[in-house]
Length: 409
Image (cartoon, rainbow, N blue to C red; front, side):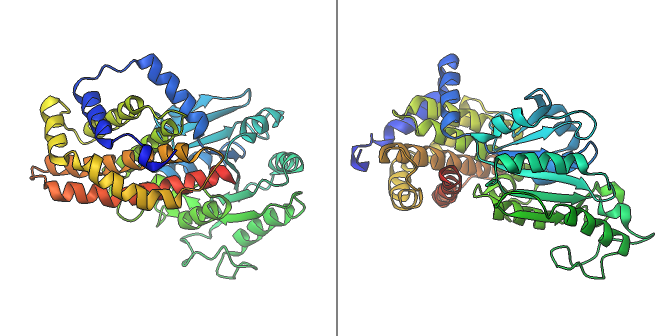
C-alpha cells in the first residue's frame, strides 16, 4: 500500500465534523472495534508485588498524579488473588496489576504469570524498608524468575523516613544509587536497605535487577519533598522498559498544572486507542473520528466548557480543513513514517496506526489551547491553534514510536 494510495484526508476532516455535529455512531460496532484495536495496541502491565501496606498505592499515586482515594475506588478484580487498576480508566495508558495479601495468605503466582505473559510488562516488587520479614516476596520473585529469567525486576524500597533519627529529614542529594551506601544515610536505614539487597543476590535469571529507594508521602506528613526519589524511580522504569511511560503519564516540563496533566494523560490514552484502530486491516475513518470526538468532549468537560453545536462549529472553523489536508499530509509523511518501526504488519497498517494516533494527539493538544483561552476569556488565534497542531504531530509520533518499539521487543 503506497502512501499515494491513501484517501484524501479531507474525507477524514468531514468524518470528524460529522462525528461532532451529528453523532450517529453505532455504539456496539464501535465497542467491538475498540476491543479489536486494543489487541493490536495492548496496555502495558506494571505487575506490583508486595505485602499489604508496603506502599504500592502510594507509588501508583506518585507515578500517575492521581489521588489515593481515586486509586482505591478504581481497582477491579483480575484473577483469584489479584486486581488491576487502569489509568486513565476510560482510555488506559498503563495497567497496574496488584497482588493482594502477599505474606498473609497462600499465593500461587501462576494465574498472574499467565495474565502477564502476552503483554509488555515490568515486574515491580515493593518492600517497606522497616519490614525485615520479606520471605514471602522473595519466594514469589524466585518462582517468577525461574519461569521467566528474561523478565527484568525493579525492587522499590519504601518508607525511608520510618528509620530516620528524630528530627531528621531526607538526605540531599538523593544518595541511594551509590554502592556502598554513603555514611550520610542514617546507620539504621543503611543497614536495613543493605540487608534487603543482600538477600536478593541469589535471585535466578539473567535480566537486570534494579533497586530504588523512595519515600512517597503526603504533603501533610511534613517531609520535603513528599515525592522523594520519584525521579530516580522514573529513571529505573525507563531503563528497564521501552514504553516511554513517563512522557505519557507526566507529559514533560510543559505540563505544569493539574488541568494540563490530566488532559495530557487522556490525550495520550485516546491517541493510543486511535492508533489501535488505525492498525486494523481497513482503516475505519468513522471509528477513528468517533474516538476523537469522545476525546474532545472529555476535554471540554475537564475545562468546564459547553461543548455544544456553537462551540464545536467555532473550533472547527478556527482549526480549518488545512489541519487535515495540509499539515497532516506534509508532517506525518515526513516525520512519522521514518520513526515508526516495522512490527510485523504491512506498511499500510503501520501508516494507519501512526497517522491515526499522531492526529488524535495533535488534535487534543490544539483543543486544550482552545479551551484554555475560552476558559480565561481570551480570543483564540487561528494561526497559534494550527501551529500547536503541527508541532504536536511530531510529539505524538514520538509517543507512537516508543509504544510500537516496546511492542516489538
